[in-house]
Image (cartoon, rainbow, N blue to C red):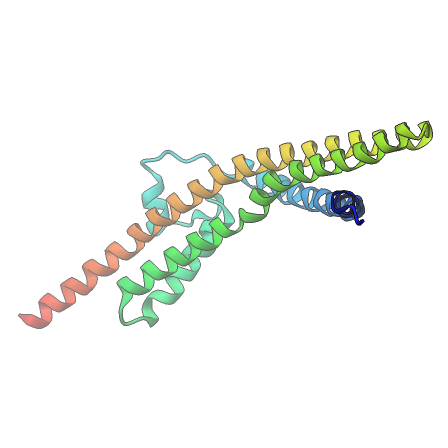
Length: 212
């Protein structure tokens, strides 16, 4: 008679054992992604450190008529250039400006998805990489194979450390960059208000003259 329970146990054990090397590979890839994100984070941090301090009451006038290159980040500067470039070409300016602002904000929020995934996935992979060798190590202990047990324990603990290190680093990067993006979106909204308001006043004045 076929022992269904034994077959299921063997099948599950086979699945769990086969996941070890894919988990190790994914942890290595996520570690490389973390290094890349850390490098871009450091570059952006240097950029923001070099920005000139600006009082909140002076920023609107700088965004409206001045050159904010050294006051705000490159994201805001690129948005202002795109806004000024697209304004004269659109008939429905209000809709075009609103769409540009929402599209830019959406792209900035999407850029945080990778860090958010690292925060969640890396510790989970570290836990999976811990439990799988523990199971095979206990099986080796039952057979008296201490060499196999020690090897599995080393793999188990190292995967835990790597997963937690990736998750912790990604959480720090995510938290700081989230604050930077919120600041950039606020400056984009302010720049939109300051740039489009004079144009709306000019259009209104032209319409008034035409009506008179």
